[in-house]
Image 1 (cartoon, rainbow, N blue to C red):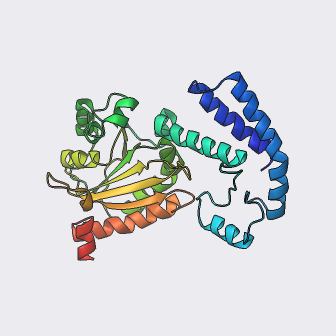
Image 2 (cartoon, rainbow, N blue to C red; image 1 turned 30 degrees about the vertical axis):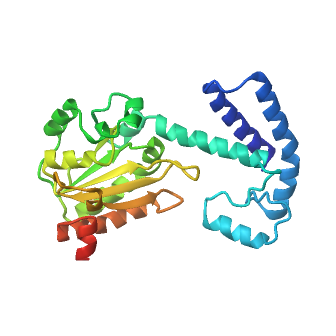
Length: 294
């Protein structure tokens, strides 16, 4: 790991910890000193094996470790110092954790929604804290949102597209600009009647059920931010359901997940979802019911 890269990780982690009131001047000095001492050793080790950041001392099978690291984002080959992770590995984990927290706690920017031409409605949730502690409220629209949708949305369309923040604003801003045009244009080219896409703030997956019934849409598809992990905070899911009702259960939804640059590329996912929606409309079913028909 290059000196400037490690220094940036250290600074990012310390900034996040300081923001949370978890640092002291002595702690900052100790961490920066430890990082400086380990940098030279780790730079020498990485120079021998390439830029894969394999920090295991004298690995038995280096080629196997390299192959595994290419196949997964899991923390493989990070080494240890006694019973603990090495400093660089630990700081990288803290930095990734900070990124995941930002994805959850930050809102999708108004500038992004304007660029995507998405108007916004909000669920019955009042703020981010309530969103995280009351999932039930994230499945219901606010009274104001109901009125807005009745005024601005066409009823009785075949497919209604939602963009929902869910648990990762980062996933929305990283993927929607590519997946939404591919999805919308593909559906229109197939002769499928599509409603005006819009954004749902503080939304959970189940909010699509109320919207489907409110707008009498045949199929609802929600592009929603997945719960971020330490591998990526950019992963998006697409939840689709055919005419939900009071008996709807989660098995009635068809899900395509892991949509991001390191998984299913967003433009490719958009094209795949067009084919999937055609199947759902033809079968008049989604989820497990669609699988049985197929």
